[in-house]
Amino acid sequence: MPFVRGTELFQAARKGHYAIGAFNTNNLEWTRALLQGAQDLNVPILIQTSMGAAKYMGGYKLCKALIELEAESMNITVPVVIHLDHGDFEAAKEAIAAGYNSVMFDGHDLPFDENLEKTKEIVKLAHAKGISVEAEVGSIGGEEDGVIGEGELASVEEAKTLAATGIDFMAAGIGNIHGKYPSNWKGLHFDRLQEIADAVDLPLVLHGGSGIPQDQVEKAISMGIAKLNINTECQLAFAKATREYILANKDQEGKGYDPRKLLAPGTKAITDTFKEISGWMGTRPVKMVPEEIK
Image 1 (tube, rainbow, N blue to C red):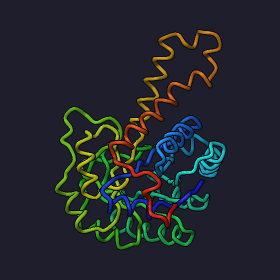
Image 2 (image 1 turned 60 degrees about the horizontal axis):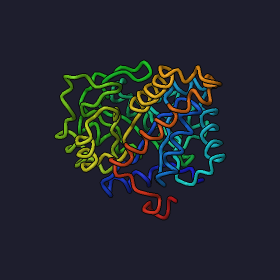
Image 3 (image 1 turned 135 degrees about the horizontal axis):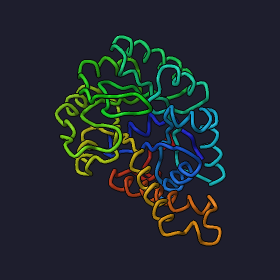
């Protein structure tokens, strides 16, 4: 049951032109569903918590313990990365102290000089404990735990400067957004992605992966995206399966109201969604992961 920091996993993914899924967890069912999917496919997984989800679930220590203990009880053998998604400066420090394998410091809403200096500090704190760091340049459109991004395209020069801080992976705004994509969305800016990929030799991260057409995701992966963030797609799958269960009056049959039964269809839907997305991301089985990180 190896818990790993993820750096080498994502470096291998970029070199191999495939991606590894970074899936948000929101509770016990989410955690079990994602771990089950990874084990069934025998692929690595990054399970991440947003600041809001961590607060809802009881804090970073609890989230870390939940993932670890679930993995132990389920006899999970694939590599698992426990990651903080879109953390501010204080959240990143808390997650480091709690023992996460990987943290994202999201300073995109700060003046770039401040983002840069705080990223350097997080890198210093995290790397001293063998923890990976993700940072963001530009902004991801939409809303994530109260942080609003207007979809500003990442600056290539800022990307190069941020990469020089020693971060392990980089999120870059290339027209992607969080949540559901509107009908008038213009698509990813592949020209900017290519410029960043040419300038920065780091695994690149595509946030807002839910809802981007598959052909665009596949093209982005071929150009350097190694980490694909997914949350909304699992939420929608969970909600749909749960709604169908209730509308079919299954909760009124026998002890169908038992939460273990009530939440089962939605939990399975998350596992199924994980498997589907991992398939077209080209995520490599563990047997194809570099020996030094198994």
